Length: 137
Image (tube, rainbow, N blue to C red; front, side):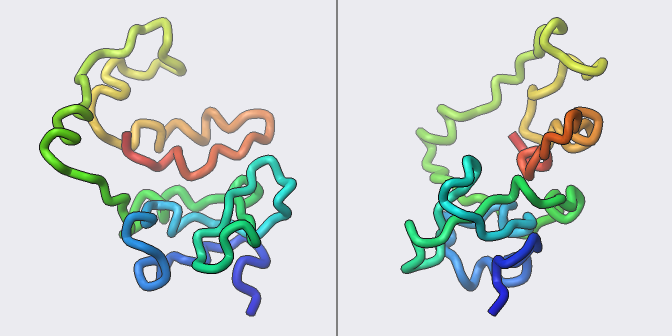
């Protein structure tokens, strides 16, 4: 099999069938490939029996921001009342001196993919922005 041999969204159609529900997130729709453990961006495989044997990264791969934003796999969280209450968005405005590119002071005020529309603008110097650009926070 060529699974993981080149950049592709290998898990976009079968992530729920192959991984523990607690591991599911938008990474399932991200393009990635297997890399050498020495890669500074390498992450250990989540595949049962392959932990510590196979390493992957999405840094070398171009990402489809729309596919990641629309990814059906979402991170499950421990939503007990105490955890939920402790992790509420503060709904605080960001001080203007920390904002980039005329972003609104409401940046980060509520849970949303705040960086989705700005990542292409911030992708300077050949830096791969990664799937975090599409994540809600």
